[in-house]
Structures are given as structure tokens and as C-alpha cells.
Length: 366
Image (cartoon, rainbow, N blue to C red; front, top):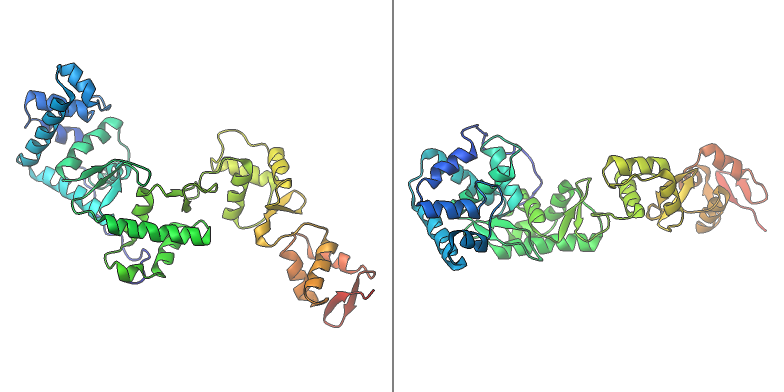
């Protein structure tokens, strides 16, 4: 498989407003005995929206936790064997199709949102409604994957290939570890397309890659929807300096400290008000930033340097054996400092340091 980037039409089931989730689940539970119905309703929080523990249900019914577990298991088996109407069959098929499309495993919240969006044409739902879908996930023969250090709480389909999942996660981890850079989803797909993964895994699809990023706890997405390692400061920036770095990287150009402060607030990077002077004070003390103009900061990794314009011109000329054309010299200075061309010209007029020669400038001989 080549060219794994998302192209063409996104094939989706057209959502149709058929019936509310509550009516579907209520009708389904009618197949159970009174005790089974009570246990399932309590266990999944169908009535209250708050699922209860086995112990809490056992105390309420004056039975052991193990007995509650057995009643729950029997109830799920009964629901799986019960006769299903066409509406319920379509809903279960939709759930299974979503999980298959995403590579066999989907985080709990994402699967619930997909079901409401695709089947019920609803983008908002209550906690109570979300809990109701869990009963349907069991009917769709999905397995609840409890979250751990590696993955989030998820649902997986029968036959889920964990080796395939781990292989793609490992590849994504290598991409981030080797580059130490943040990537958009489109950039990640292009990176994967330039590896041997499409040949090793013919079943690989863009939806799998993007979904595995969501499932794995190794990765995270920042407010600009750029992905990286979950522990990276630019994924979950805490201090002003990390937040300023993130803003500068996104804008890809030097910014005044007032603009940096404003963008931190606009992007929701801070719960508290970030004062412009605080930003200025933090950045001027950090070697990762360079003051390239009056109140304007750039990232040092972009090639900017401190010093006066005259000092930068001297540094540039020294690095090229003392001579450079006027055009190239101006271009080189502008890559290191944000100044006007006229300012560069004024500094070049210092005849004690620079000598104008045919085609450019050189350092004056001592």
C-alpha cells in the first residue's frame, strides 16, 4: 500500500435519526428477569448515569459480589441470545463497523461519540446516555480493555491484533523519538507513508494510525492539534516559557512579547491571566529565546543571535572569510535579527570596520 494520506471521499454511513438510545435499551432490558434488569441497570448506570460497583449492588440486594457478577454475566448472555429487531441489528452492525474501521480498538469516549454521531446524528449526549451504550457494546461482542500504563480505557473487537497495534505504535514512537518534533495528523501520515509499514502491513489505513495515537498513552495532542510524545512539555506546557515556545513554533515567526501573551490566552494555554511583562521577564532570561527587535522574540533554534546589528554583520563576515555580496549579507543579517534594511545599511557605513568593495562588503584590514 502506498500513499497512505487521507484522500478522496470519506465513506461514512449517513446518520439517520431513528430512535433515542433510551428507548432502544429499555426495550432490550424487557427480555431480562426483574433481578437481572436491576443488576444491569445499576451496573451500567442506566437509570442514574452513575454505574455502581459489584459490592454496592450486592449490599443493596443482600447478596455477594460474586453472585452479582454471575447475574450480570447471565444477563449479558441472555441479551446476546435474545431476538433482535432490525433497528437493533443495524445499530450493532454500526458499532462493529466503527471499531473495524479504526483498527480493532477504540477509546471508550471516542467510540461513544462516533456511535451518537453516525447512528443518531447527535453530537451531544448525557452521561446517562453514554452509559447506556456500554450495554450495546457488549451485545456487539466487544471486549472492554481496561486502561493501563500503555493504553486508555478502550473497546476492542473479537480477533483484535495486538501485535499489529504494537507494531504501529512502535513505529510512531520511533518517528517522534528520532525527530523530537511535533507533527500534524497529515504530517504523521506522510511520515508513515515513507516507511516500510505499508508493505509490512497491507491492512494499514490512515484511520488506524490516527486512532492508535488516541488509544496509546505514549502520545498526546496539544491545543493546536499537533501530536508528540505525551510527556513532552510542548504537548502539556506548564510554564510561561513552554507556552511561549509553543506559540512561536505555531506562528513560525518572531513575535512581540505582548502578542505572545495574547496568543497564550486566546489558545487557552493558561487558566490564569498571563501578563505581558511576565512573558517578557521569562523570555529575556532564557537562552532558548533571542531578543531580535524591540520587545520581539524568536527561537534560537531558528538561527537568530544576540548582539547589535554591527556585531552580527562582523560575525557573518568572519564566517565567510571576510567578504559577502551586499544582497547576501543583508539576507544573512535578516535571518538573525528582525531589523529594517536601512538599519543594516547605516551600520555598514562604519568605515572603521567595513570596507565597501566591488559587489559587496568586507572587513577592513587591521
